[in-house]
Amino acid sequence: MNINAAEFKAKCLKLMDTVAKTHEPLVITKRGKPLVKLVPIVEETPKSMFGYMKGTVTLHGDILESLDEVWSAESGDEDPLYACLKPEEK
Image (cartoon, rainbow, N blue to C red; front, side, top):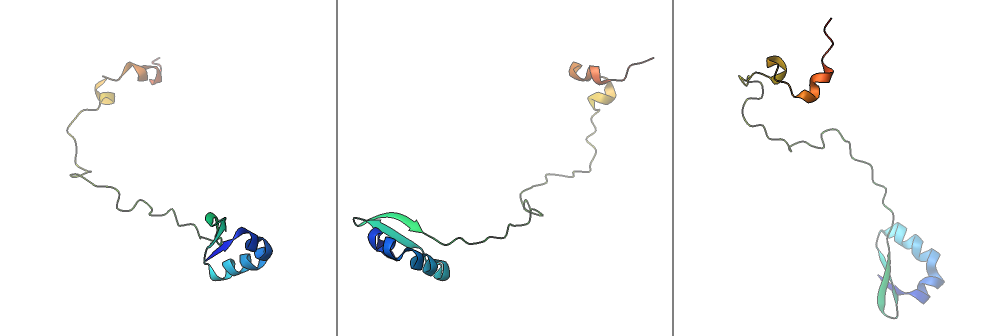
């Protein structure tokens, strides 16, 4: 539905009620050119965050299988960055 700005100004409140009731947008024109669109606010219930990433992960191989690699923390080849985190020996 289109309406010019002067007519919208005269019938503003009634037109707002109509748009809210019918949920049809109203395009307001000025000198024949579309200027703004009046649309109703639709209350959206927020979607649950539970499960929103379902289907986005792909597993390759057995995630429980041992890697047969020694961790650097077990072998003592730790990065010097972590050396300060070791408990002091007495």
